[in-house]
Image (cartoon, rainbow, N blue to C red; front, side):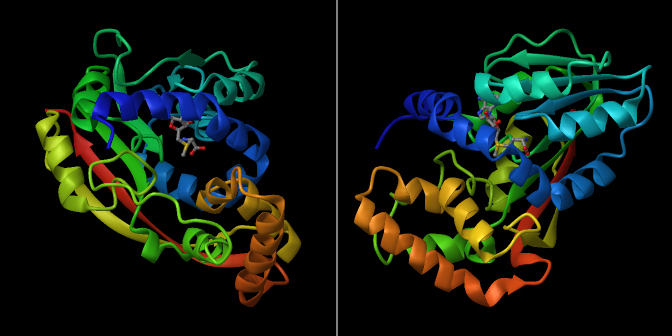
Length: 284
Ligand SMILES: C[S@@+](CC[C@H](N)C(=O)[O-])C[C@H]1O[C@@H](n2cnc3c(N)ncnc32)[C@H](O)[C@@H]1O
């Protein structure tokens, strides 16, 4: 088992390598599929015009763009991400936005300026640190005292059929991914609310308010069953399980994904349930 430092380095490599490239290639799909999450996050963040906001782990810049509209010309949005390829997409889409600064840096290490930020938001960008408490201490420095942190993270995979159904289908034909330990970084690493509370309080935030939200996610982005099969095999846990597997097994696995998703296909997309936590806290 690797230590937090190695895990952190592995995550940075992943987001600058295979993981980041998947998100770059599937940017339109993830923007579409995760739009309901952005709506929930931004409504909860309640960002005022003229505010200064940090979008942490901003990726390809979808929420950064929405925040830029919300704060207006008198406000400022800092989008920070460790993935150079994903930030490259953000830079293209936000090139004309005078109220946006993009920074390519590790949120756990970056020397943030003296507290300038009113609100720190993140859509699924805070679950990938080897030492999350140290990371929250570090980027918490960007927040003005009393400033708010609002982020979304996934609940358990069992509550997220949009991810579980295609993953379990591919497991009929390819080996299982290693099961992450309870403190390992990864998309479901903040599913345990007690762990999230411990990390935030230890990092100098108030006891967070954590509320569940249930969603319907269109994993075909408005397309049909074949689009859903293609997306599930190119991004998310099923795609990671397929990586490097023999062609024959991959072919069988795609067939298994197709059959597993068929019951969810509708005339308006391939609709599966998703489950997130919305987490809010203040910097003390
Ligand atoms: C699941 S993606 C979410 C991207 C974006 N927030 C969205 O919702 O489209 C996770 C993001 O966290 C970023 N990330 C992971 N570790 C990071 C770190 N140490 N510092 C900054 N960003 C990090 C990744 O590069 C990636 O863009």
